[in-house]
Amino acid sequence: MVQFQSQDLPQLLIIHPPLSLAIAESQLSQKFHLLKAWESELPLDQFLTTYACSVQAMLCYPFTQVNADLLRLLPALKLVVSPTAGVNNIDLVECRRRGISVTTSGSAFSEDVADTAVGLLIDVRRKISAADRFVKGLWTSKGDYPLGSKLGGKRVGIVGLGSIGSAIGKRLEAFGCIVSYNSRSKNPSLTYPFYSSVHELAANNDALIICCPLTDQTHHMINKEVLSALGRKEVIVNVGRGAIIDEKELVRFLVHGEIGGAGLDVFENEPHVPEELFALDNVVLSPHNAAFTPESVESSSRIVIANLEAFFSNEPLVTPFMDD
Ligand SMILES: O=CC(=O)O
Image (tube, rainbow, N blue to C red):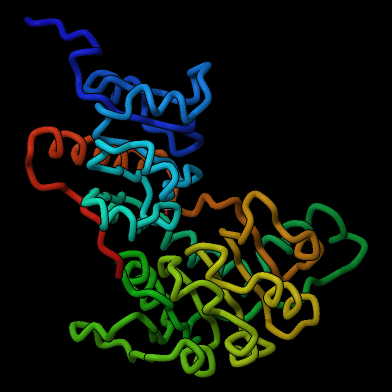
């Protein structure tokens, strides 16, 4: 059997070390010659200049900003592979202009994000995390804990009905919720009522679940007016990206009791989370890990590798970027 040296393998640039989303390095290094910028003693721009003429593919974790300045240092680049569904860290306009393909995790994370979204909604409505704190502290001295409200029969508006939103809708139907949605366009194959305005969606629902991509159009789309339309008893869940909601306004609404509660997996300036939220029992927080289970990370890893193999064999990419 021919034994390949890593130098004989196609180069794959990775700029930052992976965190919880790590694709097993052993899997990658069997197939690609990994150029790990973070392990080099050279400053990043010098490291990139060394490989500028040869690097065609890059794997970018969500905290790597693939902006025009970075892309300028990589004139031979033809493919950016993202192991996540969201690609708001990638300058897609510049990639398109340069003819650089971008791939995502496809639907590898959809089921797990949907589970967490519904979990956060149930937790806020039924006060599960707050009741847990109560049981561990005050139950004996303070008696009953306030009742949470039923999920079944509630109207839930989903913002973004791609594969995550559809998986959320399926789960909510099983709970007996009445689902409607807002998306860039109406999907004729769906029977859920469609609202072209997110404001109208908020006004006609008991809860909103945000799971659309962050783009220039969706940045701060959930603003003061939308939060007011949602109202005092209603709940917002965000498993999309923090900046889709105007976070300062959300904090103000929550602190003043102007909306009923929030389940938040994502924040505007992660890992910074507004401290005002910590004391609120109607707010449940999670550290941007809605998507990640060992199973979903494994599935995303397979997709990353399949996309890279397809690229280096001149075959069609498995999950080329498409937004919903
Ligand atoms: O946040 C997770 C993802 O974009 O897949």
